[in-house]
Length: 451
Image (tube, rainbow, N blue to C red; front, top):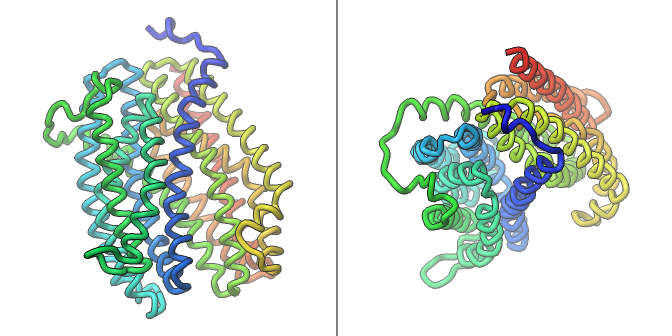
């Protein structure tokens, strides 16, 4: 079997990668756009509303990414079953994923209901408490939809159908604006809720997105052979264990990375708002750019996972090599963009002279880690496709929390580097993660070759 399918061309593989990656990239951008719309609309209300949203989103995003990250396990499992040509398994994996997603979504919703009680302990100013609390209570109601959507999204993308998810994400961007207006400014029986209204609007939107994707999967002919809604299936301990064993480390790895980036602002807060503002700008730019290697990594998980299921090692190595090469090209392009267009990029965010100067210097640090970032996320994507998630979880924890965080805090607080110190910490952490993940990928490939 394997020698028949081992012939694959560079052109074919690149076409497959891009066919998957481009819709995923649009999906990632539009999901990031949802938070951006909330921030812009809340900013129009008042500084208190904007700050309340910032606090709420800062706590909701890590919880949301941790729980929806666990559901990413659906992708390599479906890709493997697809490669091994066992379609009957795929429907089962999708159903079991939905069970887990529902349970995890309920847990996440409960966590977000409790979170407002922690705000005073976290030192959130009194004036922000009512709005930030209501925002968290409201947005928590959408969590089961978020996790179930993530499970269905993984199923659809792993089968090579990323477009429906993209279409829904783009429509969601348009729907969010009127929903926000209704809940922020009140309409009919709905009272005026200010920034907290964004929480209700987002929760409703998440349910609409899940219902839309579920309806599409139910109706479209592409899912006929592996229809998850064709039968009812009880919770199966075997799959639950497998999905959680694979998924939990993925969710944690994403959580370690995201929480490191979000705590950086807290580390810098005593150094004054100019530095924090400049840091937020540089962060915003790089997190948008990060969507590119991140989308490539998701596409790599699917392609590597499919060949892993076929046990077609030659083709799998080729995909990995092409993925890393593509990631390198993208990183060089983004570095050039940052280098040449720094002033124009910063001008989109601020006209303040001091903030601009600091942001311009911080973007140079952002430019410095583009290659490391592209390589580490691509390597992690390949490892996920080979269902190796525990190793990468430990690697990210050590690289970001044991190394990057202390280095960043020390340089920012105890030397005259200030904001730049946090960024040097990030570069050190990403470099360590990159070296360790690539080494691990090399070792696992070597082990497969010698079998």
